Length: 86
Image 1: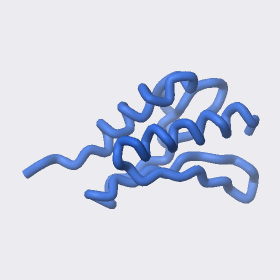
Image 2 (image 1 turned 180 degrees about the vertical axis):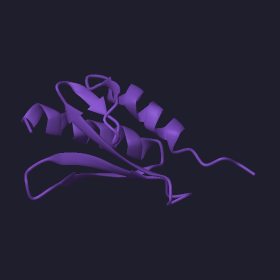
Image 3 (image 1 turned 45 degrees about the vertical axis):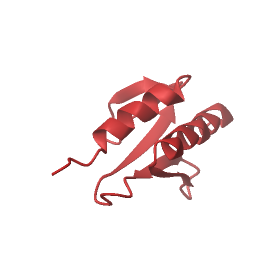
Image 4 (image 1 turned 180 degrees about the horizontal axis):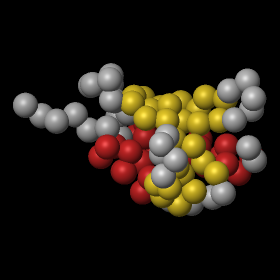
């Protein structure tokens, strides 16, 4: 993982925090890093986001958004992790 990818993950964390989600960068023993995101109002709603090749990727391997727009990516994650109101 390059430093640019790590920096993009940190920017995404800041945007997710601003939207009220719990987010942090996790670095695995192998050096790979990802953002762990949790909806604090519905803790079963979680997602792991990776950054590779200047793009953010969903945990299932689908490209989510370009990494130079962390606000746009955070909006997508927030939408996916939104709790449905009763």
